[in-house]
Image (cartoon, rainbow, N blue to C red):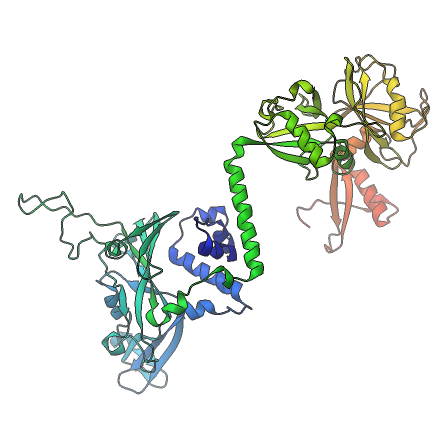
Length: 618
């Protein structure tokens, strides 16, 4: 709400209503539901009161809008009178049967006689003839009048809108008739003369319509506020034309073009469907206090700074949105990003480009690709000569891997002309940045027939997976030719036995298959961007020795299947839901495996002593 009113005061542009409706607790459905303007006004005042509590402006809403009425019942024949004081934030005035505001006020304070079967039971006096009525104790500085344009029609059994002509003055004198609207003990030193400052109009019928408003904040020029459109209007448009009826003072004038007194054509009159619904008057003696000038120096500095910054960010986002068709986002993944994510944020594939640590640039689509390299050099400190980029592609098995290297031939190519992978957002280009490996100062020479492979290392004892590195290999070489490189990545002895697998896919199920060391890379159908997972051999090659029983997932496929299917499960006792035990299990676990894990967690020697039942909510 602070932001909303700050923008209304100082923003030269129109202000959206999302902040307002969000402060009410309204969701998107509420925002598109037709609401009565009086309801909205009251909700707004309640929220303002709530936010002002405990501050120096507490009770400001009451001071501005709150008046008081006294309901009384006075016996005619005995000395007995009952009174009850009530406050009001706005007044509802009858339109039906009244020609103007004064007649509505007369009706409001009209005295009702209670007699016959409707006698009043006075305490200590029994049933008595009495007079019942309402008088005003005081009026507020800002008087809000709601005109009762809608009422229930018992004849037609439905709500109807009253479009009758109803006049309201620009100057309202509520001291008229020798203060006939006020109680005897009210403060008569306060002059209750008001000036009209706002007219809120409802255009439409019972089941829907449109609101717009007229205001004269300076007391001189009337302005029309219709959604985001603001225009100057005359006093007659803002006031007289909002009386309703057919627009004529006596409802007898003809609409232009329909009948006249010379040709005796019957006059046709059309009632207006737009008319004043709420009026806002400000007491003349309080005007300077209510409509005082506000400049930015009146706003707390910390609040002013925050709101100005929010506005700058909003304008920036708006400009970016308007220019979005001219720009594209380029996300660049490096070995560092892959190492950060594998085993922590993710285990499958290589990179999640939505991770906040991934380097991102917003570039003009017309920019040559070589300029991107210069930007990366200035931002990341990687010389252009040490940069080589790879395009990514989504494969048929739904994995996402580097697939095509960008050569010097693409340096003059515009960013927008680089082919984007299918299924990716139009304004996003994902790249893998290859740089010299540790200890090298230049990129390796790629020979025809070489493929780029990525490696992951699995530790069966620690049950961890990490990114090991990448390397080029001739497609004609054997898998065993990669062993020295893998041992170097893992800092194993060069003669260490290894189990080697290819991570193929993880949807809808994990597929990670062993590859034979004597086969060629070509026979294994390996290509650019493929992932090799390796681990220490659990037993000597060619033996049937079983892995250690302490290893829950001895091989990489076992571990990846566990990661794919792991599920956090909560347990609690039937008789006591306060103590909750949380275990990480697999969706593939059997019932016996679940109770065994739970028994180990809570220290029960026999899992058969545990019986589980499902619960929808703890």
